[in-house]
Image (cartoon, rainbow, N blue to C red):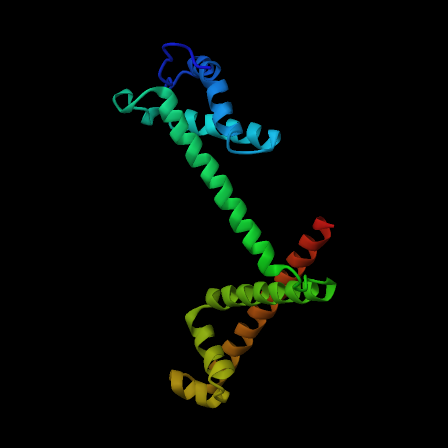
Length: 192
């Protein structure tokens, strides 16, 4: 039980908070055990309550009531949050109950999609790193499906210049692709 004149929670004094904890522990544990039926849960919630009290000690206002009333308010919030979280978890479990979980084939497919997305992001970064002249020719030929002559005409350059730029752009992307593939293989080897 709390002492006759409990002290307010000290804001920045861990040793003082330890004294406050000792004074209020039995009252808070009693509050918790009247609401839960598991000793382990009661111990966990009591610890969570005092952690919240330590973190929120600066919010205590003696004009609003005794420290125990403040602690009971924190206790009520911590216990309610626990039960709300448990209810959400139970609803989620109920929603997936009886549904097929992922098998090895599903996991493999998801990993393949992740790898493909990673490769696409890496190629997009390599594309963005190209100079404007190289990217311009590449986009007109690869994305807009123009011939090299048509791309050259659209850019106002000679066909020979367009061919050289397209060759350089493709070479840069192939190099970036090999670098990305090598980095992925190294990552996979170190993860195993």
